[in-house]
Amino acid sequence: MTVVTRFAPSPTGFLHIGGARTALFNWLYARGRAGKMLLRIEDTDRDRSTQAAIDAILDGLSWLGIEWDGEPIFQFARSARHRKVAEQMLASGHAYRCYASPEELAQMREAARREGRSKLYDGRWRDRDPGEAPPGVKPVIRLKAPLTGETVIDDQVQGRVVWQNENLDDLVLLRSDGTPTYMLAVVVDDHDMGVTHIIRGDDHLTNAARQKQIYDALGWPVPVMAHIPLIHGPDGSKLSKRHGALGVDAYRAMGYVPAALRNYLVRLGWSHGDQEIFSTDEMVSAFDLPQVGRAPARFDFAKLENLNGHYIRHSMDADLLEAIDRLLPHLANGPALAAKLNPHVRGQLLTAMPSLKERAKTLVDLIDSAHFLLADRPLVPDEKAKALLTEPAKGLLRDVAQQLAGIEPWTSETTEHAVRTFADGRGAKLGAVAQPLRAALTGRTTSPGIFEVLAVLGKAECLGRIADQVSLAETAPPID
Image 1 (cartoon, rainbow, N blue to C red):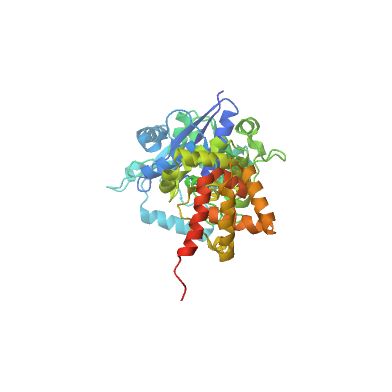
Image 2: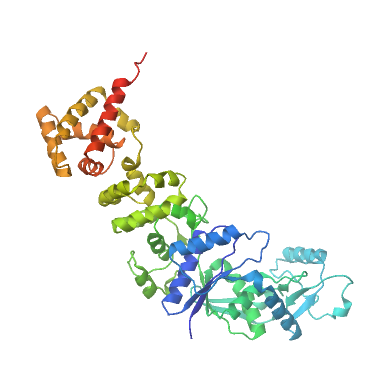
């Protein structure tokens, strides 16, 4: 048997982080067994489904590196097939037409609430002659569910789950306007797509009982089911935007790399000993459903950042440059930064990358730490750097620039020797020279090593930036 899983999002918004994890689990399970993962867009909610959301889902999955097999299947386009199955169930006696009015249904719900019953519909049209139907009323089609016994799911994560049939309603399969319900459409689509394993959030666990009853009524085999716990915030409460309930596109814009986010998501609720870092091949090989815990996983931004930093540090420099290129279109200032990445600056960035990536936890951090390469001249120092550029410090910079002007070749080693010699000659500590030099060259008080900065920027640029800061001081208007 070929294992077939599916990811079935509703295109009513972005691909959120919980959906991304569900897709990843389906993908890993199928790939680890030489199977297929199919993609179904459940777009039957026509008022809320949008093309923008569909595009965001496809783009988010592609960015994460989750590939589906074949073309996406759109549920709404299969409505005729869903209606046909409902009619077949009607003909076989496994479904019936219900003519209950909205007022009657409201009365039933109210009575059930008063009596503490979970079953809301009282089955009044279950065995009634359709000839008694009130004129002009369009019926719904309901499942004729078993009234006694149990409905059982042997769930791969939750274990054996049992529902008493007396507590389950005769659910609606086809609405009065002829549109299929979610419950019917999911069962028909999963059957027709040959889905063997359904892996989804445990908020669908109750749906599993109802869907199994439809499978049984149709005589179709029930797929293996695995209902994975939802993701909660660090405080154990339902995941919200402040915890990280964001779209995958937001994580991309924050500078996370796909491999790190995949690695983080796979460990949210799934355990494999003490191993934390997984290559894609290791995930595919090791992932299995029994190792998924029943308790909700807790999202931890700090842990994700640390993991992302690990992946950045261990990435090839050229790959990081390409990752920055892909990120820029998703940043507010991305087009402006992209315009500055001419071949010369790209070369500088690549040269500086070994030092830059050691400090970065995200690609945004990486870009920010490369500010000194991308900033316009004359640099506008931040407040901390401005505080270092005192009048005595600028005099020092003027003198060290004269020392540096004679340096050839211009390397980190030769410039370091010159600056140290200059500091020794002034009886000053190296930091007394290096810190204002850093402020003048980068506009900040933190950067890669100052001698790396000197080497990457080059002689002409460094002397020009020092002159910028000195001349700005000399031409500044007097303070009243």
